[in-house]
Length: 104
Image (cartoon, rainbow, N blue to C red; front, side, top):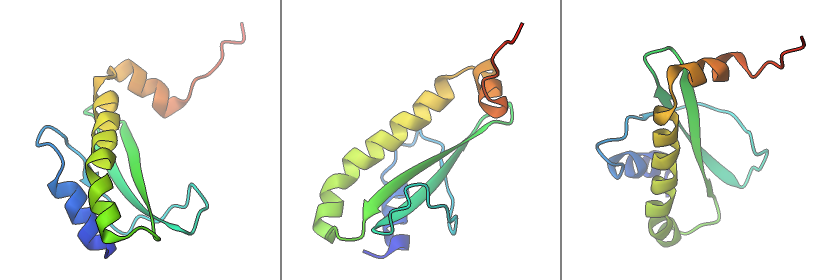
């Protein structure tokens, strides 16, 4: 299945409550696995924090296998977005700065 078609399928099947932006052309290889196509999405908060969420799909999967797995993949992505949005801005601030151990 073409990557653009798959990305459009993912976006069109997301709940209307989800506010994720697809990041087309975003190239990062976190898994270092060339056998997966990666799809990136961004979620943002008014405090300025953004989350980078992704899905990976094996290039060896058939269109039928992808279509069967799509609801589960989308559900996981939506749950990650909801988790990000349920954090308060103080927590988002800690994400931006990193967790710094108090050395006192």
